Picture 1 (cartoon, rainbow over the protein chains, first blue to last red):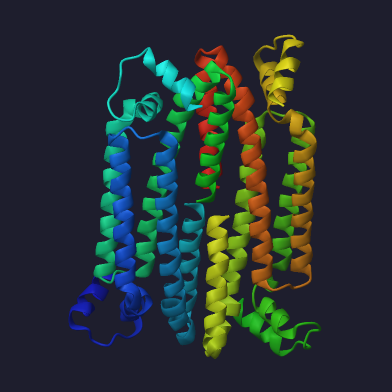
Picture 2 (picture 1 turned 120 degrees about the vertical axis):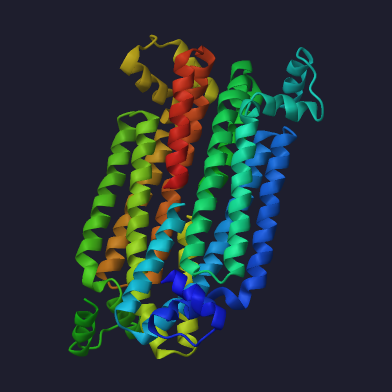
Length: 118
Length: 118
Length: 118
Length: 118
C-alpha cells in the first residue's frame, strides 16, 4: 500500500480509496514542509552540538539540559505533525466514513500513545 | 560547590580545557565517551532520516513513529549520562560532604525533573 | 458501538445543562462510562495504597514503582478518553465542518500536548 | 532536615539486610511523611473528582485536563521521593561504599527510567 502510494506520487494521479493515504498525508503536513524541515535541521544541529559537548568533556548536567531541549523540540515537531494529520488525513477519512475512518482513528490513537510513552 | 571540586583537582593530573568542567565530567561519562558519541551519531542520522521522510512526503504516522524512536533514543542517552553522573560526580560530592553535596543532589534532581517533564 | 451511540441519541431526551457539551461527551466516552469509572476507582485505590506505603515506611524505590504504575494507569485512561473524543466529538465536528471543526481539532491537539508533557 | 536525619542515625542500631532498606527509606522521605501523605490525599481527591466528572457526563477535554493535572501531581510526588532517596539512602550507601553503593545507584537509575517512561 505504501509502495503503491509512492508510485502514485510520481504521476500525481488524483487518488481514490486506498491511494487516498498518499493524498491524505500530502494534505497533512505538506503546507508546512519547509518549516518542519527547518525545525528538524535545527534539531540535527542540537544533536551535533551534543556530540561536541561530549568531545569537549562538558559538564554532565549541561549536556542533560541540552538533551532535554532536543527532546522537547522533537516532541513539538511530533505534535505539529499529529495535529496536521488529525486535521487532514483523519478528518478526511471521517468525512468519507466507513471502516477507513475507524482504522485512521485507531492508528492516530496508537501514534498518540507512542508519543505519550516515549 | 565548584571551589571544592577545583581544590580536589589540583592533586590530580591536569586536564586540558575548562578544568572544573573536565574534572567533574571526567568522573562521569568519560569512560563511555565513544559509546555516547556513537549513539548520538545514530540519533543525528535518525533526524536526517526524518528530513528525508518529509521531503519524500512519507505517511504522517510513519514519520511520527520515527520521531518517537529518536525521542526514546535521546532519553536513553540522557538516562545513561544521568546514571554516570550520579555514580561519579554526585557520589564524589556526597563522599566529600558539605554544601557541595547538597548542591549536586539538588542539581541532579532538577535535571531528572527536566527529563521526566520533557 | 458507534451506530448504537448514534441510535441512542435519536431516542434520547435533550439533556439539562450545557446541552452541547453533554451531547458531545455523550458521543465520546459514554458507552464506556462504567469501565472508566472502574479504572478510576482502581487508580484511587492505588493512590490510597501509596499513602499506606508512606505510613508504613515502605522502601522509597517500592513506592516509586507504585507511583509509576498509577501514573501509567492514569495516562491509559487519558488515552482512552482521547480516542473516544477523536472518534466522536471531533469526528462529528469535522463531519459538520466549519470553524467548529477547526476549534475541536485545535482543542484536541492542545489536550494531546498536555498529555505528552505531563 | 539532613542534619536531623544524620542525628537520628547516630542514635540507632545499625540495621542489617532487609531492615536496612527500612532504615534507609526512613532516612529518606520520613521527615516529609506528613507532606507526602497530604499531597497523596489531594491526588486521591482529584481521582475521585474524575469519577464524578465521568458520572456527570462532563466534557471529554475538561476531564483530560484534570487527568493531566493528577498525573503531574503524581510525578511531582515521585520526584520529591526520588530526591529524598538520592539524598539519604543512595548518599549513605555511597558513603559506605562497596557493592551496595553500585546496587543503590543501579536501582535509583532504574526508578528514574521508569519515571521518565511513565
